[in-house]
Length: 334
Image (tube, rainbow, N blue to C red):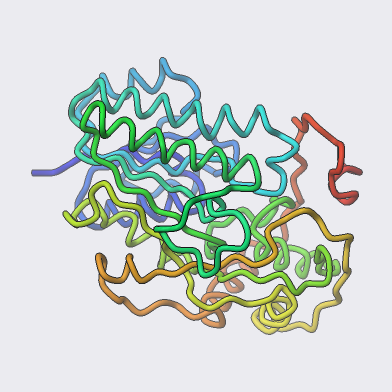
């Protein structure tokens, strides 16, 4: 029997890849996206597109009333850890209230067989390396707090209503269809756009902060196919790249992928988790040990896509709520 999956944020980066994988696997797909971060052209052919926000609970309820929804893949979010300190109301409205609207509708419909939520390793905070699912989360920014709140609500909804869920905590995802014009998040996209615009690569602090970068296929494909894995039900998984790189190392790697030796401009350090990478042993045990795309290969694929698309005008977030302690390079845009 063909199943129907609702993919929120399906016109965005990760969501569009999840939707495409579901379609390739024979599922019917409904995409809900307000196009605030994604673009219509990202929605894969064959998906039914509904323009709107998860914050619109009436719209969400109508979607569930229009036809059976078997699986929910909730990827709609504004995923900017650093900026979330300064857009707290926006962050919690979009990332918590929007999620609650979907959970309510899923419970009420009685048809949802699995609610797949894309969280983040931002829930762990600092000083827990490598980050493991059995650690107690201690998020340090409103984005991580919001994600952890939704995780907790899903567990409570399972206990109260029997709603089955799967939680994924990806990190530092990059690849084709990423919004390289976003100046606040996705450092690889920022670097590639700066190179194409003839600008120096901007690095906060000394560049020795480290992250493990995750190519899109290594994240989107397991997320999409998790609904076929019984052992994944009501579990939480870290997912993504294994090997951490400093930003200084990333500068060189992106430069090689783009065929340039980039100039670097160091900006004052901002308040952020310095080192963040996670263990993926649990995911390997449940989903299998599939071969991952290495950083050099992933950057080459993204560079080819970005170069074909061309440089993008950097966007400005218009709804900043707090300016105290904001990085100067961001504050001058307010």
